Length: 548
Image (cartoon, rainbow, N blue to C red; front, side):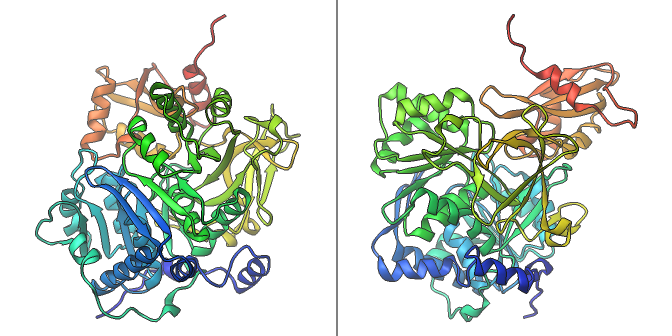
């Protein structure tokens, strides 16, 4: 069998960089697979995963069982022809299988490409084609969407895709039944462990990027390690910890913090596949969750549910919020509800991670996102003195940065180390907090929302609508510290409606959370002297006005 190696999998940092980061303890010669082997040997019966799954109850995995599933899944992928350097796409909800699948890919030297279930066919097909994925693992249906059927429809247009693997109640012709083939069948000998390289690309994650064109960010096991290990050290994560996040396990925070971090420290990962706070509180209490990372909107909803039900989570010792601006009242609510301060963090799919240390500088609560770990650098740049009134552009240089990015549409591969001496422009604005950390002050570029809606994609699609003469997509506050998308439209001959625009985009197969949730009509868009839309002026129109 001819094995076609994906070029992205051959990327490695320079020998000098590897030597430097390993000497400083920021990278390591072994990997998270070695962590798993350690806990399998030392604490085989300790809980590794505790997952609540809709319709299936509670799944409990010990470290011995977790390691067995990693081997079994790797054997199944190998039997399907997956070899070192090839890409396996994983589009699943928060199910326990995500972690073992990602590690099974690493065990084969393959590249795992985790994809959120909210990504719809239009985007999914373009990613599978760009990455030349040879296998795609998906769910039969989720959140009223037929994922397996959508994958089957696009499969004939994807020449590299050899196998469609489906987790569900039933499979169709041409699909591999995950539970039968992966969970209940043993497959031959695995390749030599030497194929595991912690410094070669092993993960392809996704972001829209500052320009609006989505891109894959290409990580190694070591760049991921440099993200979660400092947080684990600072927060005292250990074998007695129970780590929970409602973030998608296939997203950067869910994978790094929710799955990799507890596995690294021999702790237990707590997972829920549905976000229904009132129903989840008893499960989280029974699981004795001690550490939570969550976006502010979910945290507010959790506290609301606790107040309605009078239920408590007495074992929670630390909560981190991030992903978007944290509303000031949330700090008070966390302290009143849990009796602890609320910690913050900031990061991005490309890497880099700054965070507050619990109990440190309590007077800065709500006015800092923290500072980086040792060996991780930040730099604020501007042609003027930097202050809260005039913030600077945030640059980072870090062992947690991805090795490269890959454009979804133009296919451009950008190796970060080859540009600006390794400094990466985050596109965010920040100012010093006075204690070695930073305060964030919004985005310098055109980004919208936690998951960074690809603005140019949506605008280009809307310009094909017969009732749209001109359009700009801008963010507006959602009332919970985040952003939603507003379409500011110059109408054509007829006046468009929000429902009509959403139906039009949905008909193209566009991901639902890309769609605008507000419509504003203008006779013309404000543009500067070179013809660029002045989106800052549009955002000002959308800002809520306080009463006099």
